Amino acid sequence: MKSILKMALVIAPLATSALAQQFFDGTFLDSQWAASKILDTTPSADALFSGLRGSGGLPGDCRAIAHNWQATPSGVSIIIGHTKTNLVHNPATLGSLDSLYFAFDARCDTAEHVNAVAFGPVLFQGSKRFTVAGVTAIAAGPWVHFGGLVQRADWNQIGGNDKPDFTAGADPVFLGFFSGNGGSGTNARLSSSGRVDNFVVGYARSCPADLNGDGLVEDADFSLFVGAYNILDCADPTMPSSCAADFNFDRVVDDTDFIVFVGAYNELLCP
Ligand SMILES: [Ca+2]
Ligand SMILES: [Ca+2]
Image 1 (cartoon, rainbow, N blue to C red):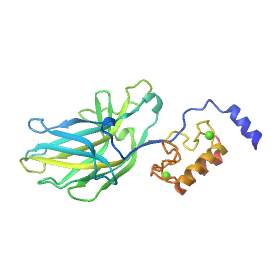
Image 2 (image 1 turned 90 degrees about the vertical axis):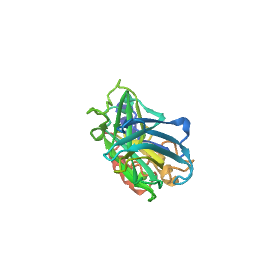
Image 3 (image 1 turned 180 degrees about the vertical axis):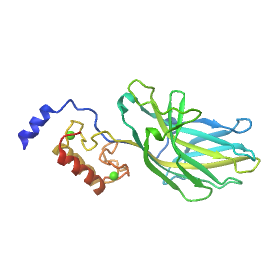
Image 4 (image 1 turned 135 degrees about the vertical axis):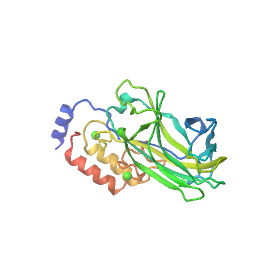
C-alpha cells in the first residue's frame, strides 16, 4: 500500500490548490468592513446609511446597520452594500468556480412605520454591484438565518444584466451582504436599523477532502480530518484556520463531513 501511494504521489500532477476554504466574521471590525449605497430610487436619492461594529449580536458583537430614507407612497428601494474589505478574492485563484457559500444571521429593530429590512449576499467587482435575493427580517422579530450556495448565474447586477467574471485576470471580487428597504405606502422619512452576525463565505475546490493540497486524499488528509473532527467547532481557537474540513460550511466538523471525506478517501485520487 505504501509503495502504491508513493507511485501515485509521483504520477500525480502538480498539486493545485484544492482546499475547501471558509471565512468567518463574528466580530466585524470597522477597519475590515465598508458600506456604500448601491441603489437609491428615493425622490431625491438622498438615503442615508451607516454600518458599524455594534453589540447585541448573536452573540457578542455584530455589524449594526441603519437606514434613513424617504418612503413615498409609491414603491422606492434602497440597497446598501456591506463588503468585507480584507476578504478580496482574486478570480485567478477562484478559477472556474461557480458556487460560493454564504451564511449570516440578521434581525430588524422596531421603528415607526418600518416593517422589515431585507438582507442578502452582495458581490462587488470593478464598478459592478451584484446581489442575490436573501432573507427578510421582520421589525422586532426574531433573528433570521440565510445560508446557501450561490451560483454565478444567481447574481443579479444592479442596473445591468451582467454576471460576475471569475476568469483569470478579471477584477478582484469583494464579498459581503446587502441591507435594503422599500417604500411601505407611507409618505414619510423613515429610519430603520438592524444587525448582522456570523457572516460566512465558503468556496469548495474540486477536491475539498484533499486537506493538505497535494492532489491525493490519503492518510495525511485523514489525520488532518480526524484532528478537526475531534475539535468539532470551527469557532474553537484550536481549529486550523479556515476550518477546511467543514465541507458543508455549517461551522462544525461532524459526521456529515466525515461521509464526504470517506467518499473521497476511497477514491484516493482527486478528480
Ligand atoms: Ca492530500
Ligand atoms: Ca460541517
